[in-house]
Image (tube, rainbow, N blue to C red):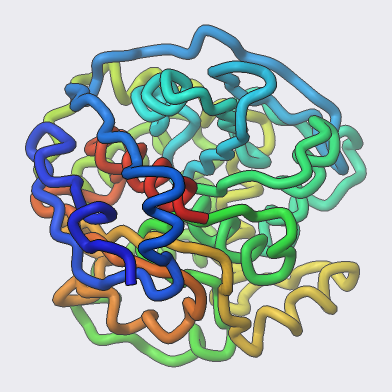
Length: 353
């Protein structure tokens, strides 16, 4: 068994973030640690140090023309960072330079319906079911000639990374997944959650109504609704208006409302997906385990974090080398609130994969 101090040396990595390493990593041997040495400890960075990416690009991939940020050496090992809702690539604006400084090629794409990502055809159904989004990232990797990458994400991004790790493990070198195993189970979603959990998901039910759809289509209302979500799911994050507005620009994508509404309605079986994805969804419905090396992260102040945040509710879904970390005092937008801890998890899980 690998020396626990070697892998779990992450205390004090992010301003205001206490990191507890809760579960060891079976499969990471002392021999591998001796061969490569300890993973480097990243320098602590204050959240909000960076406000933009130096390089923004576009590439045609699958059904989309995908906008993405890129940092680091072109020939470096690849890390793909995946954002959630209501967020965008700026969730990784501090993470990317930390990883680039370690020699990684960092790719941060706008998911479909966000930022500069566009559908190639006006006739394509604006579908946001989970397998469609995962295939977008596979198509992106193909377009950029990336055979394999470390995948790291939160929210929609965690789900997307989990799916790729489960269904296409040959494309995923290692995984960092905030909130653990979050692949959608449509059958399970038909049953009610405890009232406190349902309360945190208020916007999901709002989007199931015509009023919610109209709110997303109204620029002012979606701006204010998304800001409210930021405020409530990251209660300790002292971000300023400029930080939110940089991300809010991504909400002006012409397909944004359609993608957001379809995603949340599909999860509740209130909107259909497409037949072309039925085979993949059937494979996901049986809850495939993830075998690639994984670090899962929970944020203590995230209202969606299962109590007590020890990862026990999804531990058995990861059968390879594994560790779980709890970030104290951090909310839902974990990579932007605690960029050093997030980047450290990427380096650690890659270093011993």
